[in-house]
Image (tube, rainbow, N blue to C red; front, side):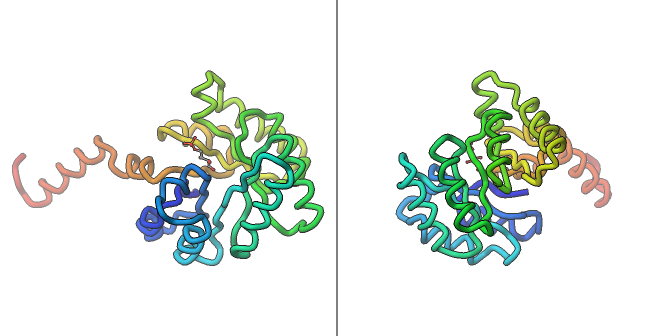
Length: 217
Ligand code: E4P
């Protein structure tokens, strides 16, 4: 499980549980951390991640050159950073360029709304694809089906590309995505809190605690 945030305090709070494979950020999440640059936030996050935990940082740019330069700027920050590159034409051009130059770097193709985008990402050698589950749902798309078909296709192709489900607004979407065949999910901190503060569980636990103390409810 990845944490979908650029907030250092949220990551610190979650690190005690040893659940995290890493952290995913995007430009919108970074913009919420007012007054701090991407480089500063990335270094702060890396300082609290273990060596084996990944930090994904997304490159931006409206031309191939701008996106490539931004990807290089991200890679120069720290060797533990993996790249997120949007899965459109410019993104695929940059992914191809980067993979030719440095086959060792890990790339996650992001902003995935179709099986077809994931197919191209797998052919391009991306290590990860990130289908945007809630954003698909907002457009009336069947995100679970998209993830299931992607998983089936990757299996058929024997592609090593992993599916990292992203863009979640409720916990059912997370489980549906995993059951559909996603290798991993990236979840905002508030959804992990929702899971840990299940109202029915809380009611049961309260009764157990009262009974253990011999108190009548
Ligand atoms: C993660 O990599 C994505 O950028 C993120 O999950 C998108 O989430 P959103 O649709 O809630 O913005």
